[in-house]
Length: 147
Image (cartoon, rainbow, N blue to C red; front, side, top):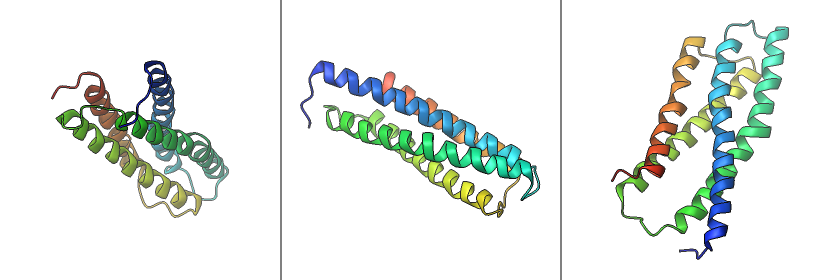
């Protein structure tokens, strides 16, 4: 367990929340870009614009925000005195799910960059719901701590 002062913990929580919000913005926006990108011809001007937008979103916002979210989340986790409660395990499972979706989004972004997308816009509309559901679970576990 890390021994952090109350004020330090509050600053870490604040930056963690900012990082999570930034990560979530990207996790919700990137699949929406994929929905539109899937409907344009590979190699078209629109496709090339989507590639730039997707790459910048992933590299400049999502990846740094994800790393900061995980690192600060781990710092907070190791400062937690309640490891046996079920909410911690549910939250960690949901965060793991979010990381899996992040990796999948990165893979699909590379597919689009290589004009090798294999999925429809409808597929990405469905995928777009995953981060929302996981975010709801994570927030409820962290705030309400129901069990």
